[in-house]
Length: 285
Ligand code: NAP
Image (cartoon, rainbow, N blue to C red; front, side, top):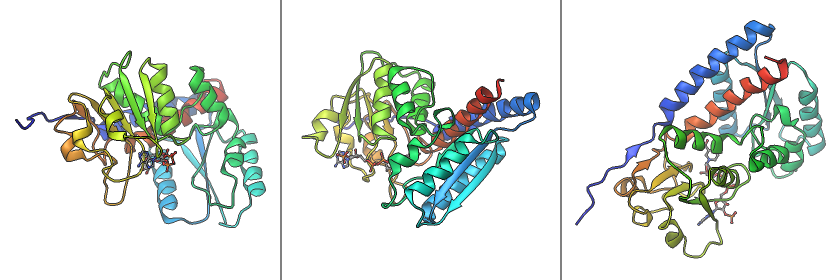
């Protein structure tokens, strides 16, 4: 008999709006008490249209939350050494509280070296080794923004994680790996899948919580989802399509994030919340 289940949608857009409201309130307290508004520096190398759009979006959301933007636009031919120097200067600038290096930065740049030039206390995008280590050990620090947003969504919908099987599909440094560590920190039993995983569908079928973080449209089929599972789709592919086949998966899942309007809006919300937290810490509020 066909399933009559329809999963509840996890409203990332709504939760992100609420977090933005709280962030704006905190930013105004910081500004009132110290005379300095929180400031996020954005660094863009080259003029990739998608990156330009992302940076503009972050600047306009920052303005709405009472966060100043300092934009540094560098030419596409910028060297690793020049980028490292720029990020070092922003790290040393007391008027800048958070730093975001828009990535990818281009194949001729050593992206890891560039990320590591960001001072950990200003690493509001959670991209440094130091931030990853602190997050993995459960120590204070800034988390990678999309994983942080996913954890906020799971918390909001009261998804119990202790003892649950969580399957993360994807193992990138900014998304798959950190979200797995955060799930482990909440006592889930975590399995990572990647391009070399044998029989992905069989692994996904065991998951109480699935996090899709691949970048391949509809890779995960509804028939692979365990009935009653929680499905988080971080993928974003051409045509506003996620990594999960939404229409079939919603017939089996208990909770599911839509694309768009699920994970996406949470990323900027976490970035701005962490920027204001960084400013508060640096300014002693
Ligand atoms: P990425 O660096 O390209 O990593 C993709 C991961 O997927 C890799 O670990 C890769 O495995 C794995 N993979 C590739 N093909 C696979 C397959 N057939 N089966 C299983 N795993 C496979 O991508 P990313 O930066 O993590 O981004 C992933 C997706 O999330 C993209 O759609 C991106 O647009 C989206 N994203 C969204 C947000 C947001 O704000 N919502 C933020 C960041 C990213 P290997 O390691 O073996 O190569």
